Image (cartoon, rainbow, N blue to C red):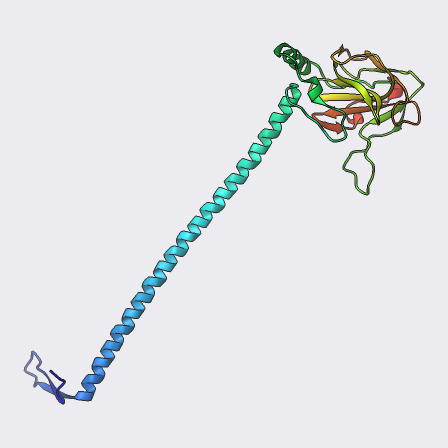
Amino acid sequence: MGIPSHTRIVLIPSTEAPAREFGISRPMVVLLILLAVSLAVLLGLLLASFAGKHQERQRIAELQTELDQARSAVAVAGDLARELESMRASQERLLFLFGVQDSVAADSLMSWADVEPASAAVALDRTAAVVMHGGPERWPARGIVTQEFIPGNRPNGVVPHLGIDIAGPQDTPILAAAEGSVVRVGEDEYLGNFVEIQHGLGYLTVYGHCSRIAVRKGDEVQSGQLVAYMGTSGQSTAVHLHFEIWRQGEAVNPRTILSGEPTSN
């Protein structure tokens, strides 16, 4: 059924008013139909676009939530990593303190593999000694300080000097700086004849350039006990004692531990 050439529209009001009549030609009807279809298509496109934008906004919101969660997870992981590293460092310090774990530091003569406990009884004895003994409490020899401590992190290529040199006459007695256990006795290319004594609280003292050694590995010594004699062994141009203090694997300036001067020892 085609579109008639002329369409008549009659409007009959519900009141006594006269009816109204309108005439619409075929081209007008076609135009109205085309407009209606166009509006319907446009409305459909707008609805589809709105639905797509809505889904995109929802997806963006979901991605933002996931990103926030990922950032939170990364932050938590970072906190856990820092806490674990702190716990690991604390554990290593405790193990070192009790003489259970090796601790080898750069430029140090310490070789804890040489002093591993041979039995549970030896380990218990060492642990008790480490806990009960204190740190260095006295200068090891009388003499004049000829070179001070220079840390290993100095700029401008300054050569570190991880101890204090005390000069004195040949064979001046060298005394233990505190009660402890002799953990190493030997000869080094730089320090010559040397002694290492482990004390409590993670301290270890080193006595170098000795002429003679008066103790053996494994000896228990008291504070002020003779351990060696001053000499010029190793890389040395004059008689002196090279004295180092290590605390939990790190060289420290003896002046931060001991008071006064070696001349008043």
